[in-house]
Structure formats: C-alpha cells, structure tokens
Amino acid sequence: MKTKTGKRENLLIFLAWLLYSVSYLGKVNYAANITQIIDFYGVTKAEAGMASTFFFFAYGIGQVINGLFCKKYNIKWAVFGSMAASTSVNLIVAMGAEFALIKWLWLVNGIALSVLWPTLVRMLAEALPGRALGRSSMVMGTTVGVGTLIIYGLSAIYALFDNFQLAFFTAAAADAAVAVLWLLLYRKATNLAEAERAADAPEVVRTEAKGAPDRLDAVEHRLIYTAVGFLCLFSVGINLIKDGLTTWVPSILKETYNFPDALSILLTLFLPISAIFGNVFALWMHKKVPDYIRHSGIVFAMMGVLIAGLVGFMRLDWAVALLVGMVVVNYLAAGLNNLNTSIYPMFMREKLNSGMIAGVLNGFCYVGSTISAYGLGVVADNFGWTAVFWVLFGFCVIAVVAWGIYAMITRLIKLHTA
View 1 (spheres, rainbow, N blue to C red):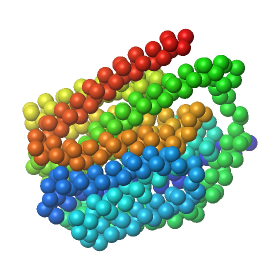
View 2 (cartoon, rainbow, N blue to C red):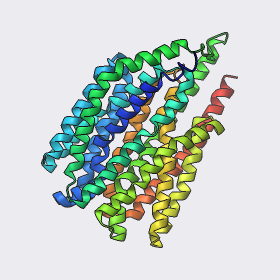
View 3 (cartoon, helix red, strand yellow):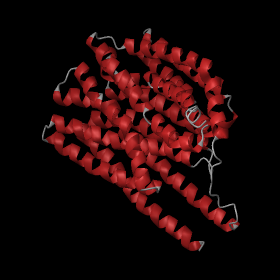
View 4 (tube, helix red, strand yellow):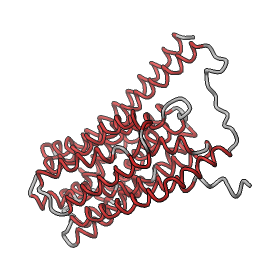
C-alpha cells in the first residue's frame, strides 16, 4: 500500500515548482536585459535600475501584506490572478511601452507576483505530510535558479538579434500557459497531497504547551520572534548581495572587460546555475548547524571573505577569478535565501503561520533587492564597481556583528527566565 501512495504529494510539489519557476521569467527578464535596455532607451544605470527598484519595492511590501492575509485567500484564483496580471504587464512592455511607463508597469508586476510565494508556501505547509517538507523545500529552492537560468539563457540568444523585447513576449506566453495548467490541475494535486497527509502516520510534534509551564511558552515565543527579527535583517543582506550580483554582473563584465552584451549575459548564467544547488548546501548545513541565526552568521562571514577577494581580483584584472568568486558568493547567498524563505517557514509550521512568515521574510529579502537595483547603480555611477563590492562586504560585517548580538540577547532571555 505504501508503494502505491507515498508519492501522491509529488504532483502538488511539481505544480508549485513549475508555476514559481515560470513566474521568474516575467520577473527577472528586465534585469537580464538591462544592458540592452540602457543602450536602447539611452538612459543611465541609475535610471534603468529605477524600474527594478519599483518592482522590488512593490514586491517586498506585497510579500508582507500577502503573508499576513494569505490565510484568507482562495488559493486557486489568487494564484491564477497573479499570473494573469504578470502576463498582461509583460505583453505591454514587449509591445513597445515608453521607458517612462515601464517603471510603473513593473510596479504593477511586483504587486501581482507578490501573491505567489506566501500563498504557495501556505498551500504546501498545509497539504503535505511531514516527511515531504524537506523535499518540497529543496525543490522549491531551485525555482529562482531555474527561472533565472532560462530567461538569462534566452536573453543571451535574443541579444544576438538585438531584440530584448522577445524576452518579454516569452515571459507573457509562458505565464499564460502555466496559469491555465494551474487551473486544470490544482484541485487534483491538492486532493492527492491532502489524502497522503491524512494517510501518513501521525506526526509526533513537540510543543511546550503539553505539560510545560506557561512561563516556558512565553520564553519560547520570545526566542522565536527574536530569531524572526534577526532573520528579517539577514534577509535584506541576502538579496542585496544575490540580486545585486544577478542584476549588475552583465554590466560589470561589459564595462570592465569590454565583453559584448550576449557574452556578458551568457557568462552571468553561471550565477543562476549555482543558485539551483545553493539550497542543497543550505539543507546540508542546516543539519550540521540547526540554529538558523548561527547558520546565517557563518555563511555571511564566508561571503564577506570572498567579496573582499573580489576587490583584489578586479584590481589585478583577473576576469576568470572575479567571475568564479561572484558565482560562489551567489551560491552561498542563494542557499541562505532558501533557508529563510522556505526551510524556516516550512519546518516551523507547528509554531508559526508558514505563509505569513514566508511572506514577511521574503518581503525583507526584497528590501535588499530594492537597494541593489537602484542603490548599487548609483554607487557604480559615482564611485565605480569596486565601491559596490565594498558596500556588499560592509553588510556581511553587519550581519556577523548581528549574529553576536543575537547570541547575547538569547543568553540574557534564558538567564532571566531560568
């Protein structure tokens, strides 16, 4: 009987993976083509980065709002509406929208797509049996890398024809197709997964409420929400680094080494490829270091060392070493992103609203994305790319210091309540 069941949740995981991966085509296509957009419209890096800033601002705020209210959504139609709206926006941009309008269209795109992550995490956390949580976290952690890889690869091809608009047509078509597939398969996928969870052996969940004093409950809640606060701070740094590299690596390679657009975009593909495997590292390290804050602090320290090395590689004009270093940094940042936005919300589902926490943490991730799009563009325009790396290094230092502060705070909480 177990061989026949036991895999019925896979359809739901696959459907969520496919939908979120494809959504990235209509989300990252602007960044993938930013060098061509700059040349086509004759704008500065800061001006071009403004559209991404509008998107990330709307997406980040929307993540928090949708995280708070996703429990009330009709999942089927909320997700379909999100994809339909993104389809429309991408189609308008593809058909030749004025540059002054694009940032407002991308704002709407951010609002629409912000529905997806907290809603999908809520759906998976509620429907899946406990043994599938790790697998679903790992699978969903590949969505960003897979979607980014596809659209950057296609954009490199489109750049050969000097037609970045094709990337927006592609995103519109893919979003529309997957939205229809979602409507067709949603009910079957959720029914299968929920039946599998019901048939699974009852999960043994340790809760302080059973036989423990109320004072211990309060302590545990205080520790949990203290951790969430620090994870919010870390989330800003994660996407400042990850999206900062993904957005600006083509420009770095083009301006520093005079690479053509197609080659710059093609080499940037190594970043999303590394991101696909970053979540595997995150799950492996989580088993070794189960404390989420300590895990994050260690990885930020590793990234800080590597980013300092990038400055040296740039000064020595070592193009290959610079690219490899950026790929490794992106790999580590992608793993942390999955830890915060997927692994933590999924595994804390018995203590926290998974959809809400996923939305809040992902929202703070996109605060970092907002800074990376416009802020790093301004830094590059005024001080050069070396200064951009020092900004990223500085946040790694802040994160490591925050790790130490968290350790002191938690120790004081435990001593105070002992």
